[in-house]
Image (tube, rainbow, N blue to C red; front, side):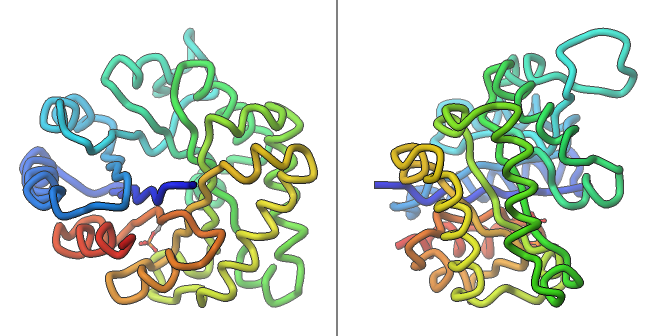
Amino acid sequence: MRRILVAGNWKLNGSIAMTKELIGGILAGIGEVNNADVAVCPPYPYIPLAQELLAGSPVALGAQDVSDQAQGAYTGEVSAAMLKEFDCRYSIVGHSERRSLYGEDDATVARKFVAAQAGGLTPILCVGETLEERESGVTDEIIARQLDAVLDAAGIAAFRQAVIAYEPVWAIGTGRTATPEQAQAVHKFIRDRLAGHDAEVAAAVQIQYGGSVKPGNAAELFAQPDIDGGLIGGASLKVGDFLAICKAAG
Ligand code: PGA
């Protein structure tokens, strides 16, 4: 049985004070979260503080990105092994903001996925179509291309130790959420595509939904058969909303 995984993606938000406040609040309420695994992904500089605050708690730590390189002359990069030293379990890879604003293409994302796993992290691989792509009817084609780039580079077995996040670009930070039916259809497409390689791996992999998840829509989304939690942006910055979303897992 797949567990629900709710991960907070803080993006470029935070401070020392906010890290203490947010994590303190999450830990104060986590006892009431029964059916979800929970993770937070703060900006890099707050990861050591988050590690300290989360020690011994059930809340996991993740990074928002990871280098595709292990070490060397790559100014500004942070490797998976470095993140692992601070007890990070996850790293988001291929978030649409990285793809669209920082020019990460499918090949880069695939290398990051491989590098994350090589360094001992579980990648949260983001895939998703733009509004234009959805409206021109090529959603499946786009998702297939993004998935296949990673399947080709890493192989299906790598998905035993990975999470996928379906994040329609048009729903991220826009207040526009995919309907549970729209999201479920793409989640099923993703699972079926993986099942074409290995049915057992496909049945086990967690597929999160991301894009304007809020306390008011989380339960309905998480109730879909192929939706296994959420990657939460804006609402992860408010303790009450984030915990309410975690509790929406049941
Ligand atoms: P949002 O962001 O919840 O603010 O829409 C989700 C994400 O980008 O991971």
